[in-house]
Structures are given as structure tokens and as C-alpha cells.
Length: 432
Image 1 (cartoon, rainbow, N blue to C red):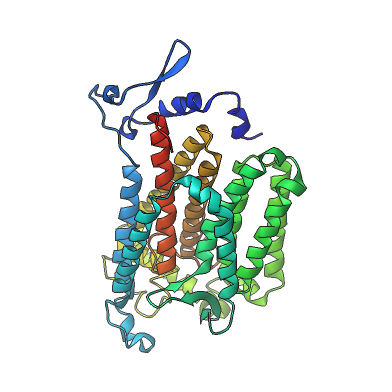
Image 2 (image 1 turned 90 degrees about the vertical axis):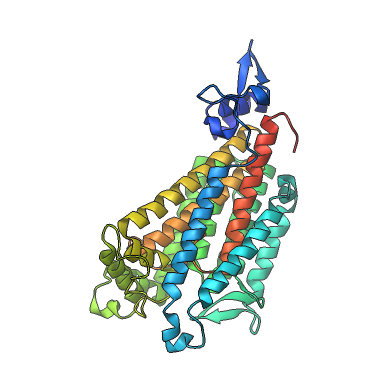
């Protein structure tokens, strides 16, 4: 059975206090046991390792710092990857700073949205979770409607909104994290019954999958499936049912590849990218991405000195931003980004575990779902750039060019911060 059942015999205050004592001093303090009961240490008595009073922080400042560093590095790399695009006839009407300006504007809009979302209590998200999921489904349908959805390179994934193109699949990622967490809270007493616990969630995931594959956007479907299955597992679904669900999903992906000539060719190109039959076709992006990493070596060619971004590597400022970063900043830059995403994902999961320890199951599962989203998508994007995974049209969270992706990424981070703020309020004896 899951960790949720193991915690059921103790009060949330005891569990939260036990968890809090393991946190570093900079997280704002702890609770101590006194005669078998748990009492809160007054704020002015909380001390750090040096014995000096520690000021309680209202939010996770290191998490915000890492997010800001990734945003800043992404802004620099988007400019570097796109500055030469106006020399291409396709982008001749653009200025060298076109993508930089739009990316900066997207960060500004996303930051304002994140600040607003930070004010929304988690209980509101829990109440509205099913509605947000339904809205994401409606938008996934609308994007397929002729003259409404915008098609690029054979894929219809965007709805033009004037200042930006909105991608409904990004909202679907947040929507599935909220809906799956809300679903597990409502089905907590039916986790051993496949038809009651897993089948309805499987139907919802199947509907999302059909809509995404119609765009087509198999990469987004893989991320959404990982979020849903991850939350089912963390929510305590029976192990046999979970592995059965995974087997069904893997089988579905295999069938999609077997019966799709386009996807089969991508797999063959991934397995043998230097084959002349693929090097100038399906494996073109992959081969030039590998060349970029090879040129980067340990410390890179220097910021702005990428050659592959000069008309060789398509979509360098979106899907293959990591390849340009690897060429210009080398192994050191790539390692920094990987470590930053690993730390960010781990910290988001820690906030989720802390919420679950205080019986805030929806908040905890939703937060961990967001952690899965960020971690899995970063893993897939970096893996594709490095040739470890077949090519997928997924951007690098917080870094790649893309307004709707940035908007939903920062909104999700804001919700995680809100969970952390409410955790801290409860630890200080407050209410949320």
C-alpha cells in the first residue's frame, strides 16, 4: 500500500512536525516533541546551526532563484539561437531581435500571471480542477477546427490570440495534474477496484490522447500520460492495476508506431541517424544536433559562436535550444542545466510530500504531478537533443521560445509556491 496509508494512524501535526525537523535551518524552523506531545517552537526561538535566530521565510527562495536562472539563461540562448534567422528568406521580414523581444514579452506576461495565480488558495484549484480539465478538452477540440487552429509544418496545435499563439496541450498538462489529483482524492476508498479507480481515468486519458494525436502531438501525449500514471501511482493505486495500466499504454504507443509510416521512419532514423537514407531527411535535425554537441566539447565555442544555428539546425530556438547551448557553452553548460532541472524537480516533489504529510492530499499529488511534468518534459527534450530518444516536438521547460509554454510553466511553478506557502502557514499554527 502507498505511503498515504502508512501515515493514516498519526495526526497531521505529528507527521508534519517530524518532516519539518529534517528540513535545513533556512526553511524557517521546526517543531519539537515535549513529553510525548508535539508543540510548536515560537518563531522568535527558532534557531539555525549557529544558534542565532532564524527569520521564517514566506516562500521557497532557492526554488524561485533556480527558476529565474533558467529563465535568464533561456532568454540569452533564444537570442543567440535566433539572431541570424533574418538572413534566411523565410524570416527576411524579421529583425535580429524579433524572437528576443517576443520571448521577453512572453516572460513578462507569464510572470504577471504567476503573481496573480500565487494569490489563489489551493482549495479553489481543488474545487475547479474538473472544470479546468474540461476547458482544456474543449480547447483541444477547437484547435482542430478549420480557420481557428493554426497549422505549422503539418501540425495544428495553436490558437492565434493576437499577441501570442496559445497551445491548448500546455493547459492540458496542468489540467491533467489537477484533475488526476482531484480524482484520486475522490476515489481514495476505491483504489483496489480497477473499474472504479483506474478505468474512468483511463477513459479521460484516452480522450486526451485521441485529440492530441489528431493534431498530431505525440510528445505532449507522452508527458500527459506520465503525469496521470504518476499521480495514480503516488495516490496509492494497487500495484497490479498500475502496471497493467502502464502495459496497456506502452502497447498503445507501440501500435501507434507500427501503424504509422511517419512514426516508423522516425524510429528508424533515430536508430541509424548517419545512414544516407535518413541523414538528409528524418534524421537531419538529430545529426546536426549531435554535430553541435561534438563541437562544444568541454567549455564550448563561446556564447554566440554556434555554427549549427546558421541555417543548419532547424527550430534551434525552440525544440533544439539545448543543442545550441551545448555548442556554445559546452559540457559545462549542459551539466548546469541538467543539474538545475534535477534540483527543481526534486524540490517540487519535496513540497508535495510535505503537503501529503499534513493530510493535504490534493495539494501534494497535484504538486508532484507538476514535478513529473517538468522533469519528464525536460528529460525528453534533452534526451532528443542528445540522440538518446527519438525526435519529439517538445520544448525545454522555462527556456525554449514559446509563449503559452512559458505561461503555463510559470503558472504551475506559482501553484507549487502557493502550496509551499500554505504548508508554512500551517506549520506556524495558521490556517489556509
